[in-house]
Length: 242
Image (cartoon, rainbow, N blue to C red; front, top):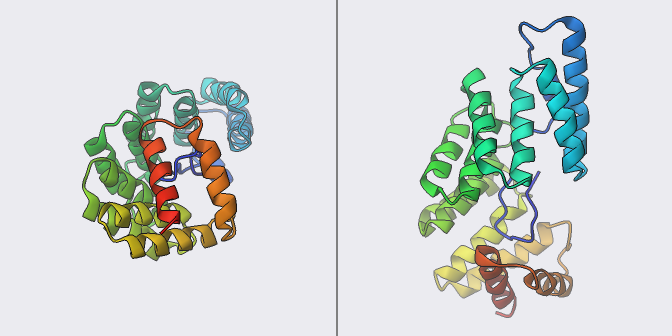
């Protein structure tokens, strides 16, 4: 899921799939395993619904029953990101990776935790590790996050390449189109910026190509936005007028 705070360069989580509940629970009894998986399922559902505290409680119960389930560690890490406790989130993602070095979802989410702390080079390294696994089912998320990290760290051409790679994997991945619009604007390629934003609005199910609705919502978001988010929104409103 994408972490939607109004930012147009959104970082995207990976790893909340019910199939993950089939992960092994070595050293745990059958009944404990079933109960741990139940609480993991409930915690994942609560997080997807925006009930962060409910997710926290359920995942803590799962951890008590099986502290070495990589999926529980990964999902609880996402909860701590929502709680702005990025160090705790990093610790949990690193523990998940220690159990499975090819756990792309955890590498991607570790990158997100580094990005939230503005540790851009560490974030970039984590996203690249996520992409090393050819079985990663949602590589567009890591490519999109990689593009955002490059953009934030001033590596604009690399950012553009990463956004384009995300679109090659999934042509409906809206984050990458917004990222390209910002990149083209930064590069003074204003016509390309306008075209990329138009594509973003067509792909984004929230707007369905409605530029007026997007402008209204973006102005509303600007009332509470700050930092990078505020600048992104201002730039995108400017692009809308090209």
